[in-house]
Image (cartoon, rainbow over all chains, first blue to last red; front, side):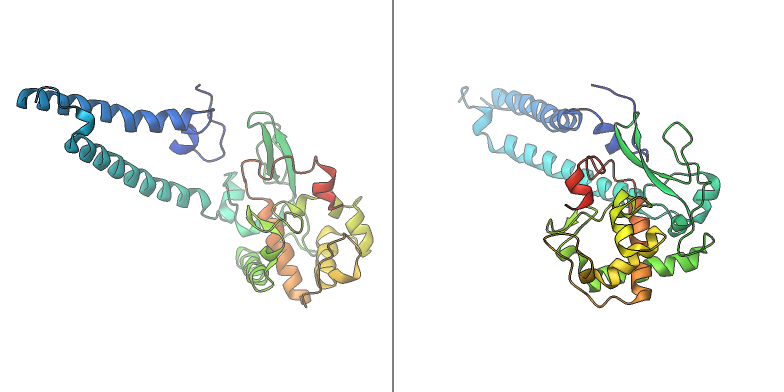
Length: 50
Length: 228
């Protein structure tokens, strides 16, 4: 999954996009993990209100 | 109300949408600035300091450009002025462009500018592809300068009867309908000698841009390169 950076100009996005699925996995992680956190907060709120 | 689901709760979706929209906005702004750094043109000092830029400066027309396989990067890369053996440019080996290899930054920049304007007024992209933009009717021009057909052993150079690649390309651009190339022949666009010179400089510079191996397999597919 992690391969040495080979692009001509160093770039965070270039590094992210070096291997198959690395960009996809990163983007899904940063979008879905906080949603999981929001879900738990809202669940706790609904439970306490109920 | 103990059984109320989070999935039907408005606040959950509002907060999720706010997070995704905000994160995507920050990412896109960052990506814009990252891209601007990647595509800005280098200068003459980069060649003297041995700095490889994705888009080299205009004086790249003074150097010999080749397209060589980089095992590290897994595709071909433009090599400017000789290969250091590691797949990086040395910026040493010069090549005469219309009889000179001492084009100053201003002269080379003006020539490239003329070529760029020429490519726009003659609408090359109406048939050709340049850096991924344009049509698929005629051959891709992104790496046209590196096409062996225009080289000393190439059929295109032989056909025009010229001694150098740049003169052969300029001659073809001025009188394309004179030369039988293709079932789809290029029309005569009324390109002057100066414009042709600028266009060839534009093509030489474009071939030196590191496009991460695009177009794929350039130089390996017979029909794609030789336009047959």
